[in-house]
Amino acid sequence: MKQSETYSGAAAYALVIVPRPLYGRFTYGIPPMLAPRVRQGCRVLVQFGSRHYYTGIVHSFVSGPPDGMEVKDIIDVLDTADMPALRYPQLNLWDWISDYYLCPPGDVMKAALPAGLKLESDTTVELSGSYAAVVDGRTLTNRQALVMQALDHHGKMRVGELEKHTGLQNLTETLSELVEAGMVVVAESIVNKYVTKKISMISLAFDRSDHEAVADAFKRVSRSPEQTRLLTVLIDLCNKYRQQNGTTTGFEVAKKQLAELAGVGLPAINALKKKALLVEEYRQVSRFAPPAGGLQPLPELSAAQNQALGRIHESFADKNVTLLHGVTSSGKTEIYIHLIDHVLRQGRQVLYLVPEIALTTQLTRRLQRVFGNKVVIYHSKFSDNERVDIWRHLRSDGSPCVVLGARSSIFLPFSTLGLVIVDEEHEGSYKQFDPAPRYNARDCAIVLAGMHGARTLLGSATPSVETYYKARSGRYGLVSITERYAGVKLPEIDVVDMLREREKGAVQGTVSGRLAGAVREALKNGHQAILFHNRRGFAPVVVCRQCAYVPKCPYCDVSMTYHRSTNDMVCHYCGTRMPLPDVCPNCHEPAITTFGYGTERV
Image (cartoon, rainbow, N blue to C red):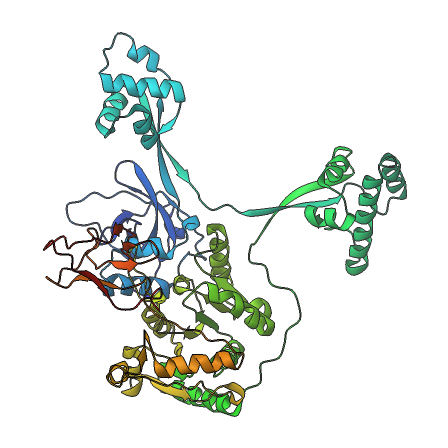
């Protein structure tokens, strides 16, 4: 499969990925009238089954259909020939995810493509125009009569709504009988989930240079101070536009902005519109708006950071993947910024992955101070329309930019990817568990970078075992920073062996004597102390001393945790609560006790 693969006369059929959880790709014919627009990676509207329509992706081309099978034709092409929805590396990544994670290509498509780029069918049922004549003299079954009555009362309905109103299930056979009899018709309406963003723009309805028209306009609004002020502000804006551009042609201002500048409400604007003094038109705009403000220079690096940056460049010379192992607060983000700047100056794009959406807010400010409108934010909390706008922006504009986002960002249509940064690469949030595809975005990012000929930098203060092993064994490059930025000292860590402390009798309740002494010292000096413990409740284990019976959750089959505040045993997986038994349910002896320490007990 070549990068520039397009339809040719010898290949009259296309293999299409359909967003259904089915393995394989489906063969569709290419009508001659659509052939010039069909390209690899473009979206096509196809019929799947007898009644459903989906947006599919052209994966590749074949010369003929499967043996002994008739195939449907592609209904329509949803992209232009020069701008398919997907690039070749994206399709390649989809194939890899499907094969490596044993996932149907349709599930990969549903996860990767924003819903606004997928048209789907909406099956509706309504009475036929001549149903009255057909029904006359015909005996209907009870199911048919209920369906006809519901349609007559509610009009056009979806099949699911029809089943809900009639209380009947599996109406397929009943509807087929009514369709064959000519009493009802089934229609498929194609639903486009993407809605363009439009704003209202205001312009003068008369020529600003016509003094008589201007005088007449002010005369008509003289009785309303708000309308007079509004007209004055609008003419002033028109004058400024003429001074900057030498003409008033094309002058317009956003309706909301005009109301704010004039200090009036929307009714004043509507009043001038009724008097034909201004014109209101709607303009389609992109939700991808660049931030305002000046740019700041690159952050200065310490000696240790400069050394690490140089070693990363050296590692990238012969390694595709490098691990930056830097202690907490060593300034890894500043190194990332210098690497991003280096790649952007080469005219290439950067993907900056973070494990949590919450981290994008603070990173966005830091990156935008340096790179301005070259920063693109993308994650699943954006509305679908916003995600479509960003997708289309990247697909149509291959200029250098840095994409900051969570794991779903790996599916974006990069064109000149030069660097992938995976921050906190050890985080489990990079793994998608449900629904399918169940993938690790860190590993997919490494594969994506390899497909683009880009380099990958994995950053962490506590790298995962597999990544650290690959770095130490030479498969990945390894760069370490062992000191904090500006020489800030690392906290002292004192590990206490609780077994030996108990043998020495130095344990006071739930904490060691050394910990208790350190807390007393901090409080005595007017400081604060924080104790972290990874067990909720009073005791993590409830057990019978006589028969070793342990109460377990009936739904999760895990031991229950005792909470003394409510005197209940609680399952921390599903929340099931049970009272603490006085006697053992197994041996019926009063030997139930608790073991271990939770936060309540501490």
